[in-house]
Image (cartoon, rainbow, N blue to C red):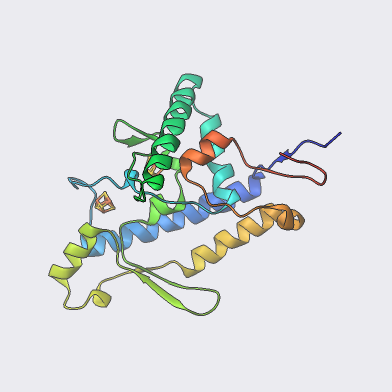
Length: 212
Ligand code: SF4
Ligand code: SF4
């Protein structure tokens, strides 16, 4: 008989490490947003309907820590919304369109899991740079509203303040490696929406001889 798959949970030490990375991201974000004069207040857009894929088991496990702490009715409402999200997402992708569907965690305009939201939810908006492990530099211009402000305030976009994500991303990779440890070779690549993570349940890894 096959052994069951084993749930991947974040030990306390990695939970604290991830929370510290998130906190540093927020501080960096707030500082750059303040300097540029970007605020989400009154924005006609809502980034929570943007189509983003997420790539780490650590964030997936952290999200589930938050989901488990919700009242059962709230969690079941979110799970239902996640299934609906997936249906609409499949339809949009089948029609060759980029999905634009409200995140199942956005309830009445507010994030139901604010302290457990994903990295991209914390970083989207401001200009940022990153140096990839292969040495290639990347620059992100920020959201449309940020780009509008930058255009009016600075003669060149690269004169605007921006956040360097390199070190924080390196730390995220460190948390992911410590979480997976020697089981890394068993871990399929993560490429999921938040809805997928909710519907699929908490992350688990196939242990040898296990078939999901
Ligand atoms: S990040 Fe930018 S586009 Fe998104 S809500 Fe804030 S101001 Fe609007
Ligand atoms: S997790 Fe929260 S902040 Fe991120 S997209 Fe969903 S509702 Fe918005």
